[in-house]
Length: 236
Image 1: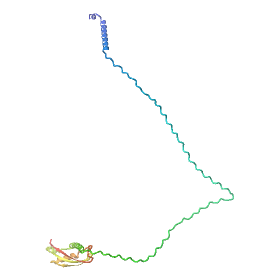
Image 2: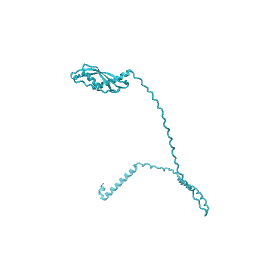
Image 3: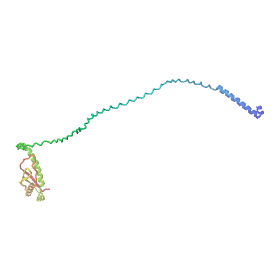
Image 4: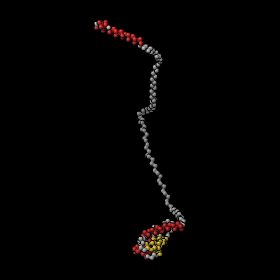
């Protein structure tokens, strides 16, 4: 140390460099001694590649075009007729004239005259078959319906006298009247009178002023006399 102090500034700097170089060399040797061994290098074997030689496919031959079909045979033209011998003194015959026949018109045959009408005997009339007469029960039922119809018509034409209406009186008169099959009234009369003459006249007038329908089916085809009780009431 005393030598470093006594030495000059140049010698002291050089000694430091030597010491540093010596230390670095020792460290490098230590690193080489204690450094791990590198792994062995990997040996890659060359791969075997099989190469197959492929012969190129020969090109296909182009198809040979078919020859065009032969043209159709040309029909042979007929041979012209031989020329007529020339006769200077003989004139050629003219072509025959064409005869046009008139059209044939077919007319229908004339109609055959109808035979004269001969009088024929008239056909005999068909026998009239009369229907069996209806039973009495059926006739009675039909007549009852007809009576009900004409009774409604009579009551519709009945006019109550004012005197009976004021008194509130009432009376029943029985009227007999004869009716034809067409509904016409042939005659009418009071068969049994009531206690009030006005009621009798009103009942008879109601029958005469009525218009009846024709008889119903299955009713007798002759006039019938009907008897009907007519109540003339002024009571309200």
